[in-house]
Image 1 (cartoon, rainbow, N blue to C red):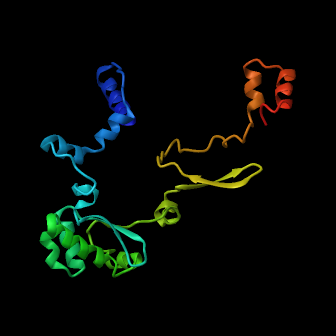
Image 2 (cartoon, helix red, strand yellow):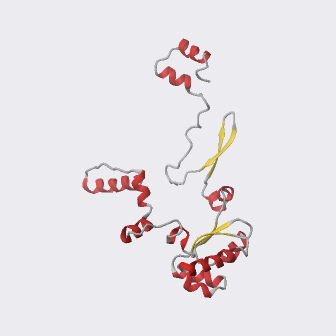
Length: 219
């Protein structure tokens, strides 16, 4: 939100020659990210529940399902063409009119969908639907996510040489700049690494610093 506001202000300045104050809060941003759910509430006055909204698990076409091996997959077939593609791929044309089933029908269809996804492992579902345009993806754990070929190709894991420690792995930078690529400027300080420097900078003399150290004030 802050970046969007700043960039908008920069564009405005380029056009008008005048700058402006950009006011952004995390609270406002979190409310704005509820766009669809909040829009439904503000328009209808009906407060959604955890199981009552289209995008939070109510719609059978848009939720996470457990697979035969205890792992999970996500289905986001919200639009008709995606739901149709999914139903056809799993040979369940009878489900075509049930994407947004409600009441007892929804409970019945949800039970059928839960049972359906438990007939195959996560990887078997991936293989079955890999060429089907139905907004389907496996749910990966962090080990799988960071070792995924796409994450590797995008340099999203950095191996850093930490003096005295060895190789430390960290998430890479998601912003790729052609002329000024991101780089690690310094390693995180070790415990107390800069204590003496900070105390010296604010006026403590060598004797006082030595005394504090002897008293166990820092390590």
